[in-house]
Amino acid sequence: MSDDDMTEDTENTENTEDVSADDDWAAAMQEQEVSENQESENQENADSLGFEEFDNDPTAGKAISPELDLILDIPVTISMEVGSTSITIRNLLQLNQGSVIELDRLAGEPLNVLVNGTLIAHGEVVVVNEKFGIRMTDVISPAERIKKLS
Image (cartoon, rainbow, N blue to C red; front, top):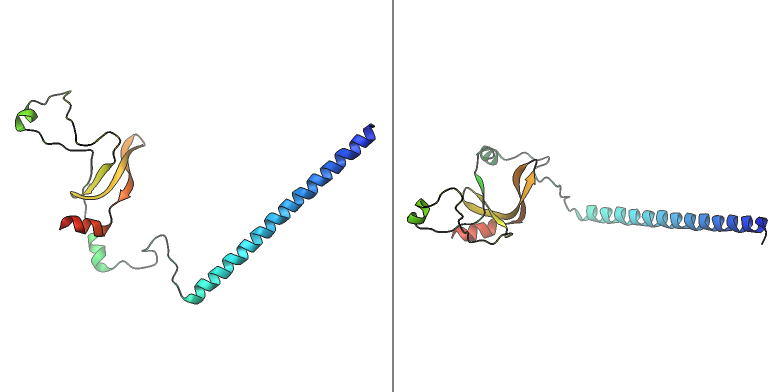
């Protein structure tokens, strides 16, 4: 095979690759256009049904009621409970530096998140900017909290 034949084969291969790349690009553009058309049709259908759009912030664009506004600045105490145990006063008085108290939880179990002593969530310890924090893993619903009060 001569050098001219090899050059011609290389050019044909490159042209074929360009055509297939163009076809792939055209197919992707067509797929995007179809998707956008479906989205606009779905939006028009939703608008015609009269449903209200949800925002990420439920208070956005709405005035907070005066009654709720009064309590928003009340401070609450948030605490994290690693575990607990019961000991006698005799054992309590014997504690000193280096003493270890066994708790009722296993290592790795989620912590309790308490607001003013009421369980509202479970979470795991994280470190943010060299300070401890907690990542909420399970938030207790208001209905469940009310059940626990009874």
